[in-house]
Each structure stands twice: as structure tokens, then as C-alpha cells.
Length: 325
Picture (tube, rainbow, N blue to C red):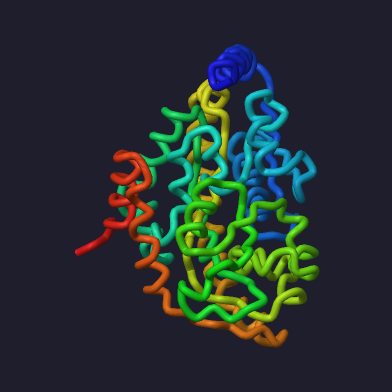
């Protein structure tokens, strides 16, 4: 499948490189977020700046709310050219390359300051993106800090032992399944649109998402607790098919990189202001915020690293060790 995708993308890239100089370029960008979401606004900002810098010769057309399909469907569509840019977390590429799942590894990135060390102050983030491009054929541009993933549950969780048997919705990614199985919960992958109803009906006991997603989906109406585990600090990026991207004129590539990085940087900064408002929003709606013993989570997850190949473990150590004195 990978060879077929690479061959098709290569043919598209050759076509683009031979025609793009003589005509304008239109790029279809997809996100599952609604238009008023911060990451949709990041895409809008990207489109505006690229259009300005190219005098309107490069147009990014945004599609919101999953109109072009789920995250997985739009990523798959990159190979056919029906999408050209997907705004999503890098972990969604784990079906193409297991190393991409590193973006969702628990306690890999400690907080926003550590994120900036990894992505801005060292070459670790760019080297990781280069490795994903080499292995999986996707070009990743920029990194936008999404904020910590927390739990929304129907029961109080004060330490890792309290997770025993908890039916928790997780994204359909191997890292998430491994994480919550190791912690003793019962991870249950399901589409995000089904989560609210599943929690209301007791089919699942909870879900884990950034607070921004929990508020957008109104989980606070379905369950009474938010457990502040901060177990993953994931990030968004602009995902391109590498062969297609490399087939664009070099000056266009450079603009797409520079403006993509800047747009994601802006999104990270905006998210810091928003995160500060989320806890109050939830407590105003009678949600109990529980601050569990996070060290019990970390300790229980530590042996999980040994389940992965040596190169994966090396990347974990590079990320976690960034900025250490």
C-alpha cells in the first residue's frame, strides 16, 4: 500500500511541478474542528498569510467539521490529492508508521515550557518530523501545543489503582490502548461523535481529551468529574503528502513551511490563554475537578517503554530528556 501511495503521489508531484509555475495552486485543507475552534482559526491564519506572501497565487481552501471525512479518511485522501493538507495530531499517522504514535506517548512532554524546548529551542522536534517523513512519506509542518489530555469520568479517580476496570473511550491508536491497558483500565476505541451518548447511557465510564474538546462536546453534561491527569501533551501539525509537497516550487515550499510554523506557534500562544479559562468554565457548571496522585500514573506506566523497539525507546529518552540539567 505504501509503495502504491508513493507512486501515485510521485506522479501527482511531477504533474504539479511541471504546471504550478504557470498557474495558481489551490490546496484543500481539512480539519474535523468546527469553524470557531482555535485550530480551525490556525488554518484560516495559514491560508491568509500564504495568500498574502504569494500574491494570491497559492490558495488554501479550508474545510471544517469533518466535511471531507474523519481524521483518518482525510489523511488517507492525501495520497489521491482530494486533500492536500490535514490539520491533526501526529499520532494519527501511527497506522502508517508506529513511530508517529510517539506524539501520544504518556508523559513524553511535561508541559508548555518543555514543549517549547523540544520544538523551538532544540532540533529534537524537527528531527522527529524528518524521521516521520523518511519512514512514512508525510511532510509535517509546524507544531501547535494542544494542551494536556485529562479524563472526564462518572467516578472519582484519585490514583492509578482507581482505574481498575474503568471503561474509557480512547482514540483508535495503539499508544492509547497500550497506555490505558497498562494502567488497568479497559480502553474502548469509538468515534468521537458517539462518546457523549455512550457516557450518558453508561456504555462507557468516561473519556480522555484536552479540556477544550471536553467542553466543545459538552461531556460535563454527561459525567460529573474531570480528573486532571495531564497524561499526554499532544500537538497539532499541518500534514502533507511528502512527494506532493516536494513537487511544489521551492519558493512555495519555503513559504508553506515558514507560515505553517508561524501559524502553529500563534495557535500555541492562543491556547495558553484559553486553557486558563477552562477549569473555571467547568466548575461554574458544577463539575468536580480532581487532582490525582499523578506520580502513581507515571510509576505504573514506566515499564511500558520496554514493550517498544529500541529506536522508539531512544526517541522517548530524547524527548523526555530535552532541557534536563
